[in-house]
Image (tube, rainbow, N blue to C red; front, side, top):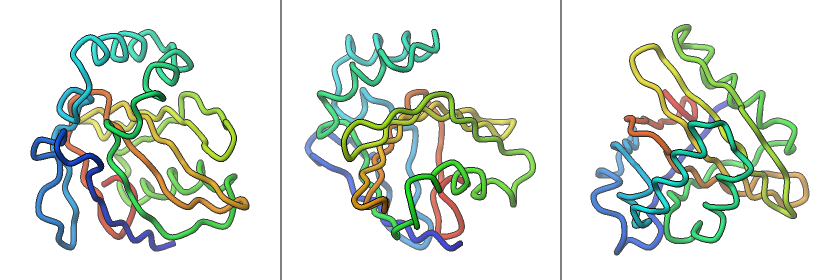
Length: 160
């Protein structure tokens, strides 16, 4: 399934060089909550909770500041919300060294919060993804990288 992505930063005043020039492969370099405008104290609390696998606590900390700290990714609609896990796994099939693990997820209203860990051997990233769902179709995805890592997004899959 082809996934066409277009990234744009929300609240651009707080995004310091988060997104490079949009081209065929949209590259997002070393995003942290701090670089996206969150305060150092909030960033520290979120990273500590993430390291301790307290994912519901991380969601509580991040949720109030979604508008100022998220990278907004528009994507084509998926058939239903149950396709999330399959879609994430499919995006790694072409790269045998890459692994995506969904650590925790919870649906709240029309949003699905998910904590995912991506590891391709050389780089690891912990991600908070928020999927906005309407009539069981995924309308948009917000992604925050919780640990420093380089994440590349392109038309062939969510993370490569």
